[in-house]
Image (cartoon, rainbow, N blue to C red):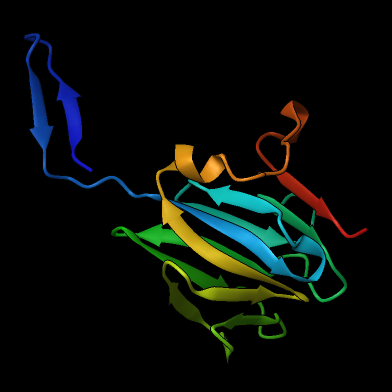
Amino acid sequence: MLQQSHHTDGSNKITGKAMAKALSLIGISGSRIGQSTVFAERSTIVGSDGTCGVVLSDRLILPRHAEVRVSLGHWFIISLDPRATIFVNGQPVTGQQRIAQGDLVTLGSATFKVMIGEAERAVGQRAPVVQPESHGRVDWWRD
């Protein structure tokens, strides 16, 4: 996608700078089946602590479990603790791992399919409701 900039002289210029696309994790196993969350920020912390950007209530999720980050248009998942249970396509993640469209990411006991696209399209997929007082945080609680 190209970015359009507006200038004080009233002209519009199209720049070649690509804007990062949103990443969506769609639950495909465990307690998250059918649930989706969208990552549109440069960096989001995932964990069981209430201050995380995405809160997962799962006995295998650590307070600050992982970071999901975009850099130069590529998405990465980063383990924030050596004890964190994180897999990408069945391979354990101990540091930083690039994630791409269609990858399977396991966090704790839940597995997600990675979808990358425009935020508006990703949001349309049964995303959990974010309460205004949560300041954008998504709370997922195990049934």
